[in-house]
Length: 228
Image (cartoon, rainbow, N blue to C red; front, side, top):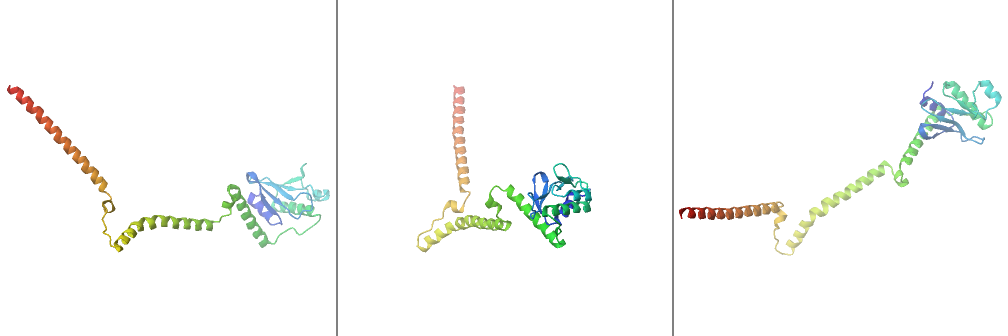
C-alpha cells in the first residue's frame, strides 16, 4: 500500500488543487469541472484511506477498468497501486470535463504547484491559529523591526534622561556662577545606612550607660544596708 505522501504526489501531478480538511484529511478539487461538484478526491488520510469520485463515469468506463464504485458514487484507493490511482484520477477528470482532456501537468510545473499549495496550506493554518487578522499579516521581518524600535526607545528612556539630568543642571549652575553644593546622597549612596548604624550604636551606648548607672546604685545601696 502506498504511503500518504506518495498518494499526494500522484494527485499533485494533475491539474488539481489541494484542500486541507479537519483531522489531517486532505481533499483535491478539479476547478475546471463542468459537473455540479468540483471535488475529485476526498478523505485522503495518513491511515491510507481515500476516495475518488466515480459517479460521473459511464458504465462502460467502470466495467472496462474494473472500478469498484460504492453506493455513494466513490472509488476507494486505499490499496491501489500508483498506476491504478493514476488511471482512476484520469478517468475521473475526463468524466468531470465531459470528455478526454489533457489532465497531466509538466513535471516542473507539478513540482512548483506542490510547493505553492504547501505554502498556502501553511498560511491557512497560521491564520486559523491567530485570532487577530492584523497580527497574522505581520511578517517575521516586521516583528524584527518592531523589536529593534522598542529596544531603541527603552535604551533612550533608561540611558538618556537618567544619566544626563543631574550633570546638565550642575553645568547650568556653574555657568551662572552659583556655588555648587555637593549633595551627600549624590556622592555617597550608602550614607543612609551609615546614619542608621550610627543612630543604632548611639542608642545602644546610651542604654548601656543607663543600666550601668542603675546597677551601681543598686549595688551601692546594698552595701550600705549591710554596714548598718
